Each structure stands twice: as structure tokens, then as C-alpha cells.
Length: 225
Image 1: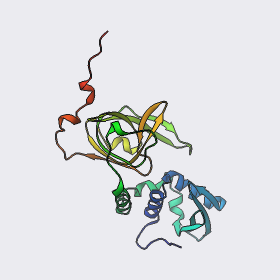
Image 2: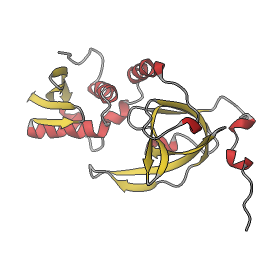
Image 3: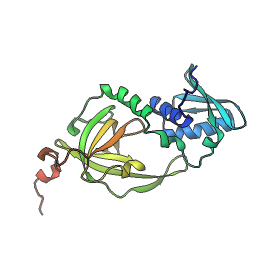
Image 4: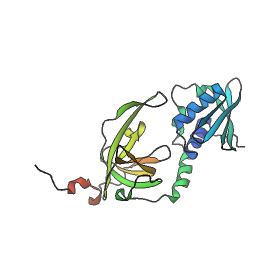
């Protein structure tokens, strides 16, 4: 049984579990709340049980199948936050170390090599367009922003699905590095999705882009009526 590690906050440890076990941080947060009310619940491939409470903490047991993942206390004030506080810990050193270790075996792809259903995709591309985001309601009843950016490399273009803070983390014209993404098909169109276990970063230190990284649409013939 793994207790909460010393000097690691509940939020950081929950973010680590979310990343390691590939469950959405929103789902994990609301599953903890549900377990506190109903004693037991499930979140993805994890089962969560509230084993008891003290004046200011709730004790949770998290299991995967029949194996104990962790047992640790979570402050009640943490569970009373209006928005998911786990998100605030998704970019800590603990998460980066885990992702770097996991991503060592990830291969870099070109856009033309991408096929629907591929996982662990790593690639570098240029951002051509970022349409105005739309507001949607998630299955948890929360509002979220979503858009499909158009990105390109020297081999082609593809839509990149972005959510919430991902949208403002990059700008049109940026060269971006994508790690641990997956490809999917939405309404018959191939897309790239970062999801809950991938990473997205803007590479601002490259300076001017080489010709092969320019918008590939510039090389297409002009269609006239």
C-alpha cells in the first residue's frame, strides 16, 4: 500500500495518478467527491473508496483491479473547491519527470504518416490557423472552450483539437512540439488529439522557419473558375 509521499501535496499526487493511470483530472476530482458522498465509485480503470473522515480530511483508497494503488488523506477544503484544483498541478516537476520517462520510447512522425487510431504520436509542426473557440457543456455540467487548430509540416496539414488553456498556450505562426498524442476521426475527418496524457509546447527559440516548414498550401495550384 502506498501512502501519500512526504512533501507532496494531495493535489500534486492526484495529478500524478491522473497522468499515470490515464484518467481525466476532472473525472478524478468529481469521482473523489462522489466517493465521499456514496463511499465507493469508479473513475476509468480505477476504483475509489472513502475509508473514513476526520475533522478536516477524508481518507481515500484507490485500487486498480485487485491491486492497491494508493491510500492517502485529502483535505476537505480541497474537495470543496468550485473548480477542479487538480489541474493546477498538471505541470509540476513530478508530472514532467513521469512524462519524460514515459515518452523516451515515442517516435517522431510526419503528418503524412499519421493514420486513424495511432497512439503515442510525437511531431513538430507549424500553427497555420486557430479558429475562435466554441463554448460547450461537458458531461459534468461544466463549460469548456474547444477549437480545431490547423497545423502543418512539410508533408501536409491536420486539425489539432485544443481545449481550454491549450488554446491560449500557442499562437498562429508558432512552431509547436506535440508529444504522446493520438489520431482519431471526427465527422469523417482525421484529427490529432493531445488528450489527457499528451503535452503541447510552443518552440519560440527556433527563429525563422526553413522553407519546408512554411504553409504547404502555398505550393498548391490556384483554382479558378
